[in-house]
Image (cartoon, helix red, strand yellow):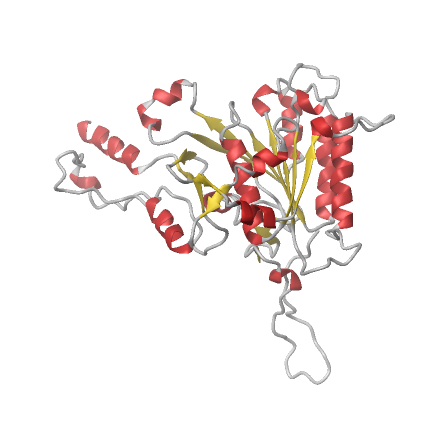
Length: 379
């Protein structure tokens, strides 16, 4: 795992007049698209969604695994995966994309287009709550005792620029996409691998072997020097646990391969810990009937979030949720170089897809705040 960035305070040497030396930075800081965490010094990369980076503590730590529980129709979880890969393309990171349903090349062609810096600044301001216009006759009147309350800030964004912003209404330019080095694994085209007495189904075994080969060949584990500047490998593994991966964890209450996915994640985390790699894994958790198995899957991940889409549910017509497309549940946050994880400011999180951008916000927006004030005024 990448070593944390630490200072040299307290060291002594002959001829020095003080026992303290200036803090030195690790060479890992020079890797494009990375920065050290202010909490624990761990090297971070952006997930591609700045509001998600804010929720999980500033970004994804190199050497860790992010688990995304898919929404029912795999619309928004697939979008998060594409953001994650697009950020890797823009930062010049190497990619590894594995899928059993859609061909990895098809997913790569759907990556969103990066937004230029001046437009990105405008996108951040769109997330801020706008003051109501007193001359607008449609503006709701607020009770006098709530008029001086601060405006509700719904958008989650870090104070320091990290990562990039993307326009989901456009796809990335082919020249930019093709410039990235991407390794792919398409389960339907892979030859079955003899696993012997291994508890892993053949597709999982082949996938682990492919990941291990890329990490060693490209020098991400430090066994061989990288040909150019040091780089980060981003692993995107789509819809693990589905029947297309030879797993029956989504089909039965007592699956025959109940330990297959957990064993896979355990081995994968070992690879990540000893390499300059970071992984995003999506899992159709709504299909996993055994909740104990799902609990073990979450505990074997460093960071775990779940997407609950309103599509097809009664919340889709609920007026309190009319500004959003779903809820974001934080299942687990990483504990890196510390005994406890950083607790987010709030767990009432919702997401929405604007015309051009996917954002995560506080569930209670200004519209909800105004409705609450109007209700209290009637009391």
